[in-house]
Image (cartoon, rainbow, N blue to C red; front, top):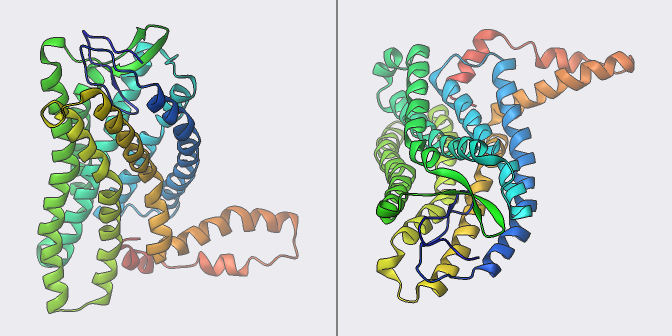
Length: 355
């Protein structure tokens, strides 16, 4: 596809272009994306939507918003849902190779894309810090880890995510290019390179460097405490949040690094067109991996969170078994009643270590 020489076509779903003065044909890369991404994104959307809605339902059903951990986990699921809400539009964009939703929706969905991404980063950081306080500074945590602080810090996290998303929202627009419309980032021509590098550095600092620093500092303190005073309950409390953060790094780090290389490719590469094609392909592959992350957290809860499995079992019992028993009276609902008879105090004790 030929690129305009006066603006940066910085595709939101693949985020590639290089503002070259000589047109660089990338038909093969676009064809690869059109074949691979729509079916994969469709699968991610379905799994992620069902999984994260189930997480939200479990929190609401069992009134689990009684700790900072619960508040952050709920907001993490909402972050994934915000991110997922943009996928059907990017799927359509890839299938048709044409943006049909107009300029307003281009800006709106681009903003949602970034808000979902940055809010997830911030809530993973908050979850890690919450575990650090609960285990390393247990006495102080009794006063600090309150519902009020959890709500206030969540509001601040959403505000920061919106703030970090402003450039992506501001510079996104729908534009006619030769025979089709694109939804892209169009930076001012005079500062095109600077804005592109700023976006890549911001993504790497907020999405890689900051979480990595928090993880190293917090888990160093947590491991010291657990080695000094082994505690199975505390170890289980840390395990879930640790797995969430490690999976986040595994899925998002290749993409953030690829974007960093893309932003500074003028200084790194000599054969710009050919190498930019290879970089575009790398970005598409790593972006595909990163996008699948929004359906991973509920799967982590199922395999790592014993209580999540228990509550999920109770929820399905309550929704399906009771209704089925009305139609088939010979089916017993005693197990359902026993599963739902857990006392509030017992639930609260379990909530203290997360899902």
